[in-house]
Length: 316
Image (cartoon, rainbow, N blue to C red; front, top):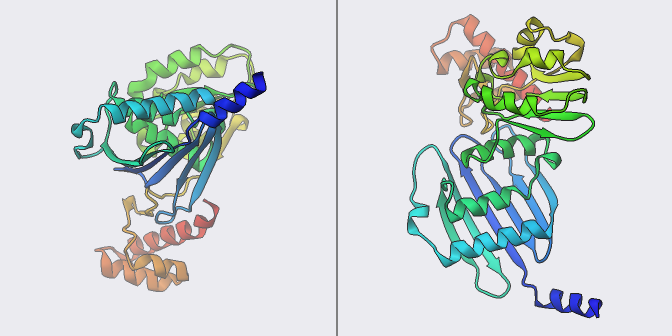
């Protein structure tokens, strides 16, 4: 009897397909697709952007998440508000498609949905299909940044069990210190811990102003660190043993894949990049001086930085 009921349930289920093309103001374009019936698959991908390569991530979606997502999409369709698609500045635009096997596909556009709105509820359900425990590397970093556009990303999250990992969000600043401290103090003492700040933006400020470093140093259990070299001195001064610090060497590239030379973003349309790829430093120095008011020394430094970035790109 149970097998018959299950067969009837599957027969009456409608296939659901949600596609979201996201265009954030300060990061590269990417897309999310979630499809299935009782359960499903969620795919997050970004094509190549500037010097950044393509990537994709696919995860299974449990029936609870699929049900929540489908319900939130139906709520949007039932009460569509034209104000949801009014364009603004410094936010994120979303072009999407709802596809139900029992009805016609529906196209829609959104702009930076606010908390409490039906579109925000839908996006919350969509991002819950990509739990932090299963998202790392390039996909994990970009997902963290995207969540921040919708106020869905906490400044610090704890993932894993043995060891635990305290992951600090890319955009974290000193104003988040109190919330981060509460998260740190909630972690059981004696548990080995990895403090991962490798996704933090360089301009976030001194690490000791954001994290309770001295408390972490005194914790029972091993506390190791993954940080950019910019933060090394901060940690050593606070008492962290250098042997517990893993340095993450980041390539100076903007979130959209543009190289950063002499502290400034270099346009991807610049003729300098092909010259750098060809490996001709003398010609590159001349090209820099022709395009910018630089001394020979400055142009030489800029050329060396750009050639180093180009050389490191295959490892991204």
